[in-house]
Image (cartoon, rainbow, N blue to C red; front, side, top):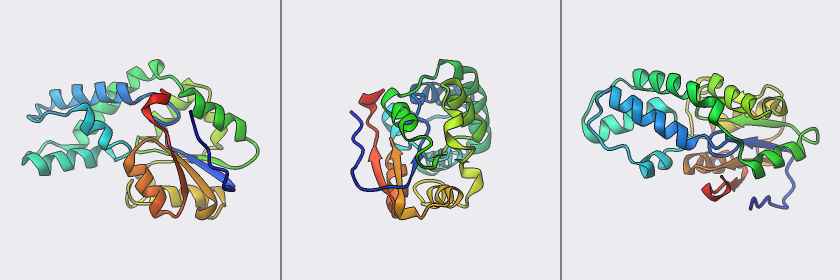
Length: 197
């Protein structure tokens, strides 16, 4: 069940992967294949993957390199992973309670997406599920800001583009880094559990 707070909000910012669409298992599949291709010596567990939900892919590789003393190319891993994931987009399904909530508030207030994925990936996932038109082209990705989640930059930019003060925005997120970013931005937030998928 998706519990939306009663507190008044004037705009909603949605994460994409694991929030609007059930893409996380397919992202994990693409991660494993890319790391294998790059001969990564470390074990990339599902728990680790979910703990980094919302973090820019290149930054995840940098964290792994620091932890394991490796020097795998972050851009190469991310690019190969993204290309693989693109082939899987037709399999991505909406997370019904979140998609229904987005449709229910569409037209009543501004809506936007702030995602750790590349813009064309986000657009592809939303388009595949008939959700893209809800967001008035306000799709914020790490390329647009100095710092990705857990920094507040992406949410603050989304609020600015919607023309709504940060404290009047509600964030829907499935990852700890996104919740930390929402808190840092001074926004109310709702956690989207895996059980909704």
